[in-house]
Image (cartoon, rainbow, N blue to C red; front, side, top):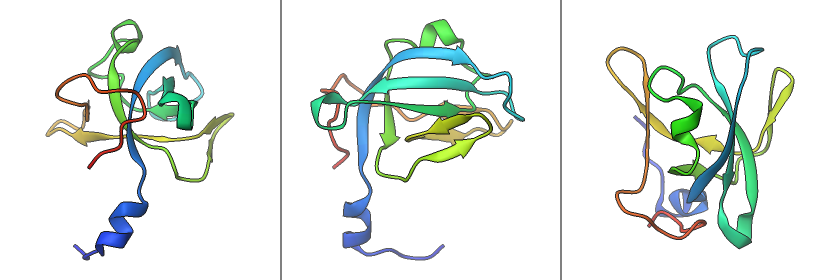
Length: 112
């Protein structure tokens, strides 16, 4: 594991957002959803692809708060352009468990 400086960490925009919409992503090579999340007035709504289908249904994701990296450049994933990184932890079986705030925070709140 390589070390980073405090300045490096401060450049990463890890922010809370609320999932507003989820769609199936049948073109994905690994099962995934297309996710839209509201990151507050400063960042706005962004979209991403997330491989969280093993543990979450599309219906239960809408309205949940998540942590996302919102300052990566957009990335083309097949026919879909991802604008942020959904964060999570890989469980022993390979399923992704979402990283979420322990309590509700304003959309756009930055991880401190």
